[in-house]
Length: 270
Image (cartoon, rainbow, N blue to C red):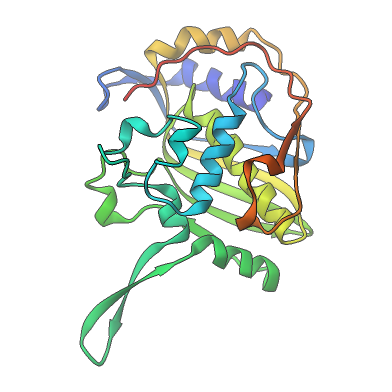
């Protein structure tokens, strides 16, 4: 995808050097945006190999609503660094997608009572009953959690929108690691969009992405410059078995025609 390489070039060309919590400086820009047309193929980077299996297990884990990594780590270790010694993750995206805590005042007692909201189920309901709704918003940012979390949500809010028969998604991200995180985020939310489009009888539209602090770790610049020398190849296709979205399993997804360049090793800054 040329749009990804354009993003890399913009950050390298105009970014400023910043310090951060990891101790590894970044080259950072403010409020980057790009979008991809999902009708052109599944947007998995071809200028380096992306671990689609790990990505798919992660998205299915989000949809499960789990807030521990005991099942996820059987397939990928990508969240191990941020879980506690028991495997609990204080900021688990799926927990907030499927079980967001909401407080309502009980007039009889004068106290607040907490209940959980399944935001994904609400979106699916609207897609089936009121596609013109502009309220198909999902958030993973719960302030009481986020300000004390070891790693508060980076991709914290997304919105679905229907134009004609096409379902699009806009993701807002407070912090985006261009080399490692953004390729995963791009593909993960495009995957989710395709899942929900199929669930509601729509076709995938656009994936749109705003990154507030778009950054490249200085240790990643050589690998990204190598990618800039590579010409993007045709995008693969993704086929999904027709099942209810909350019954999908790993084997229900088939990636077709993915022929990327070799992987490039990037170290995660924890």
